[in-house]
Amino acid sequence: FGHWYTIVDDEHLQQRVRQVGMSVVPEYQRKIDDNHPSKVHVHFYVVDDPKDHSELCTPDGLILIPRQMLERLKNDDQLAAVLADSVAFTLQRQGAGWIKDSRLLLDTAIAEDVASFFIPGAQLVALAQTEKMGKILAEMEEQRGRVALALMADAGYDPWQAPEAWRLLAPKKLPADLDSLKYPNRSGYQLGILNLQYSR
Image (cartoon, rainbow, N blue to C red; front, top):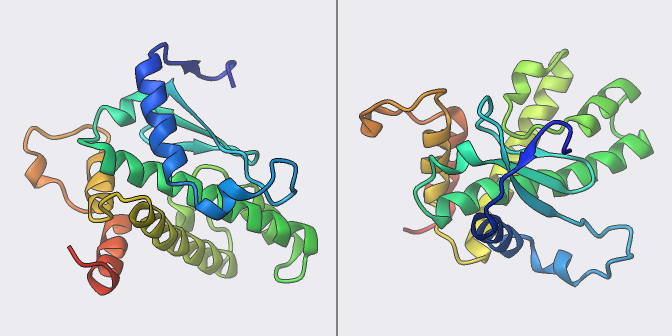
């Protein structure tokens, strides 16, 4: 990925992101033998990307976090929200790969679209080309939001910081008054889950 992004030369920042990132990888995944086919090998790197405020995930577990994105986050709990979302997407992507291979649940074209999608911060529904695919992608996005909250909570982070993280990352440019920021749809969905399942 060095052809597209520059790795940030800040070992302290890289280590912080790796540490928080690995902490939200579920324990069962960490215990799987490295050579087992169900093992997901995740690697976190901070990169320079002034045009994007979303994490990027590749099918093989590489997770790239723009430094410009990190600069908006206020604490490690909000960082954990972003990284948990990336890990949840990577695990979900593994399942989508199974769907693509099996062709049991979806027709071929839709299965390939679902399995190849690799930008978790994008609006999935907007990219849907059919009503069927739109429904599937929306359900996948909601599922990823639920899983990310659970990964955060299991690792000891405050899941209530997840909606705040997405609120800070939503606009292209932050306003002077952060209190004026509205919650994006992702935050709204997670707030609903938090109110039902997580005490403050």
